[in-house]
Image (cartoon, rainbow, N blue to C red; front, side):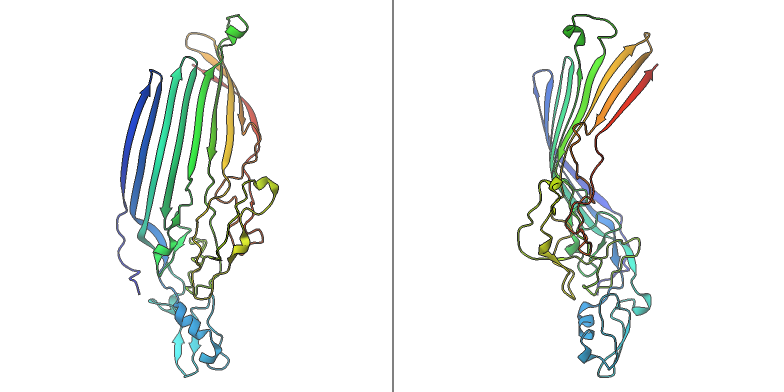
Length: 349
């Protein structure tokens, strides 16, 4: 049995980057970089007093128990069992024993890795300011937050995509001074100072987190308010996930029929996160009018639109229900806000 009470260590990270820049003319710069890091001794939650699945499976057979005994099973690892041979077994938990029940400990055994290609293009000429950025990356860890407990007997089984992993992310921001005075052939305070700006984002979705609140693993790692999910995962059968690329059709996002409760005594063969939810294609824009009042004072009027094309966005960590015990397992259950338009003014002095 591992030593769950060993002293914690100070977390540390190793970061590395290689970057190449090239200038095209006087106004455009391209930057391509490899960016990566590794983190070690990260703080995670781990069951310090897990059940013994093999022993619990033995005690789940009525033939091995005295008459009238309740067989061992999910969430009763702390029960006292009397075997058919007359032996008393004070629960299946160890090393602390049944009196302590489920006991989660904070321990610095976690690790993570991040690797990415990052490309940026900056362009500035006359009325146009443009910045485009593309990232292709992958982030892995054993636990993305303290709500995710690691497997107590083999923490490496919990290593999966990070909850915040986004494979591809492309963002363009821009600002353009509208030459209205040229269009109307009149130059005054009303035709000058117009500007169009915005941000457009296209990205992959966040990973779908698979959840199983059961205890078929017989490890007894119970959710307790800090550890929100336990350690059990579903079993998954071979087959196509059939990810739904158009969630607006109301169909399941992934093939939920491939998944089932984990077999007794096993933690589940599915990874906590191994495929992504719906992505994003969003446009935010603003029309600005700058009005100079004096040399040191100016007034800016803003018409701002968020998700200006009112495109349904099913992006988010909880957008797809990954809880196998839920009636909506495999379905898209939430969406981001629809189009929002607002007016604003800013006084500069």
